[in-house]
Image 1: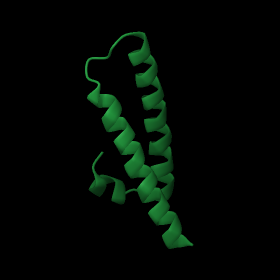
Image 2: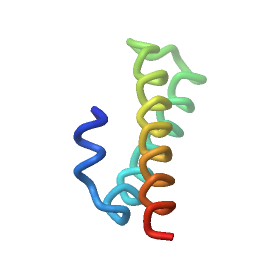
Image 3: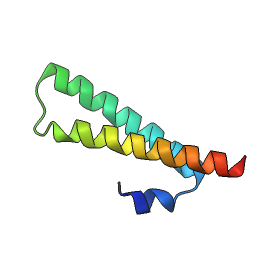
Image 4: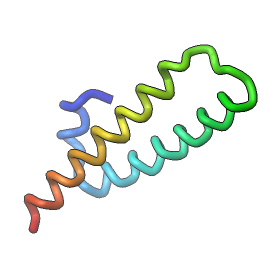
Length: 65
């Protein structure tokens, strides 16, 4: 997910998307532990998306405070 897409989301949408991405990371990690996944870059991209979502969520929360 690109930064411009994340900026367009509201705080509640970001929280929902963050939960989805964290669940996806858990599933990818477990499946990778059992048998190697096709593209390990999926793990890295998912972690980076989570970091982007958390950063934007903090920005929006600090702007509201």
